[in-house]
Figure (tube, rainbow, N blue to C red):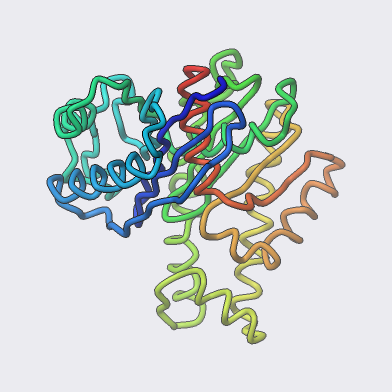
Length: 299
């Protein structure tokens, strides 16, 4: 893979980030180009922002040849054909519904370079898996943010392809849980709602709840501890069922790691499960690198 370069992109609910990935080292080289967006963005504006970032990234490569453009998108998405399937059920990117993003990008960029799409949770997982340097273990990766992303990896492939006990290709956001689905309980929107119910205070993000915890706010401290316990029980089930030896956690909620991890760790210790549970140092970087890993392994 010497002298082979890729453009990797991470598309989230609040941002688009684009970087150059060196195919030999599987590391980001040069600058990362970012823009803020929101999930209600118009399709035309979304394409304009994405194209601008790709062009900026391409221009910074100083005529290095691009092998492929690899983009990590949240579901619901037709990854094979590059078409948005956002029907409003998860309140994300509804304006992109039915848009053939691959065709639009190819036309606007006037390129025949391969344009590859993969699930953002999968790309995050593969980027983290790349750093384990051990393709023999079963790893689970989850992202805790505006939603719940998840995937199970072994040897750079979806473990769900060979383990029928893993549902829905490893996507657990809609897995039945308590009175709803998992994402109703393991996401920033869940924490914000629960904090408001307990304290009577509306806040605009998990970061603010953490600040309340930093200031010895007992409601915030208790909420994170209970969140950690519940998350631990949820993850322990999948670790036991699927032989998971490493769990990587990313997403905005990881900013409150010190408040929820002790309770999560407690669940695993009491169950005598020695699965390694670690926070992601740079989820955005992992997702961009992982989009390229997915392309190379066609995960």
